Amino acid sequence: MTELILLKYFIITGTSRGLGEAMALQLISPEHRLICISRKKNDALMAKSSHLHYIEYDLNNIDGIETLMEQICRQIDMANAEGIYLINNAAVLAPFSRIEQASSQALMTSLHVNLLAPIVLTSCFIRSTDHLQIEKRILNISSASAKHLLPGMSVYSASKAGLDIFSRSVGLEQGNEPTSVKIVSVWPGMIDTSLQEEARNASQDTAASADIFRMVKDRGMLASPAAAAKQLIKLLLGHSFHQGSVVEELRAEPGT
Image 1 (cartoon, rainbow, N blue to C red):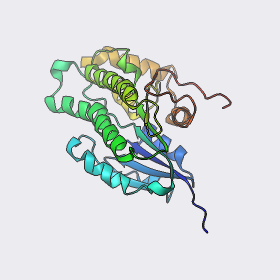
Image 2 (tube, rainbow, N blue to C red):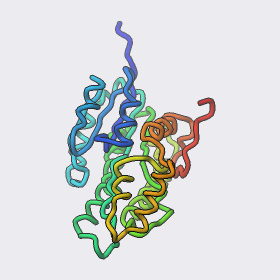
Image 3 (cartoon, one colour):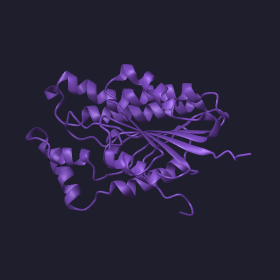
Image 4 (cartoon, rainbow, N blue to C red):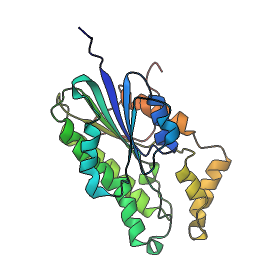
């Protein structure tokens, strides 16, 4: 009789570059299956593993997320799943401007991608896995911008603060039953990503904030996506993943 091989399944949004790409690269393993989602396929990432399924999807399209989750679930063999993990990483910085200068479309896109998409994905994930007594975890990539406010970032900060409160609330709902989904929101720290670059190159309207981002870069205060991804994966798979918590500072797991 063939021995059943148990697998961990990872659903990761925003894997076209930056932190999402770095997490996907580090999660590649014979015992892992990855479902990666972004607006455009990352061909270089796809070439790294035959155990990686890529879905091109724009998370600004909220109405299609239930269908997206059905497509995701078709990639998961529930019979051999040891754990299923959703990483809500995709985010947009724009509009990086005073609120009165932002277009309605830019405001809606920001809230859709940064807050509403993770909410709907979480709802669909819990509903789709509700019957499974296996490890199920959701990691929401938030930001210190939820607390530390800068001019030009009101919508981004509001969306990340909302993500933190949402994670706490769902944690209360889920509790610690055998079929519960554990959910955590995390501030990954300052990382040298395209969002940081966008902030550094912002227009004169947000010059003061852009100067802060340039200073952080010039002083070497930014972590690499790879370094941040390593810590996030330790949190996701480790013993410090406490139901409904908001992790404001990443710490290494004991013994690592």
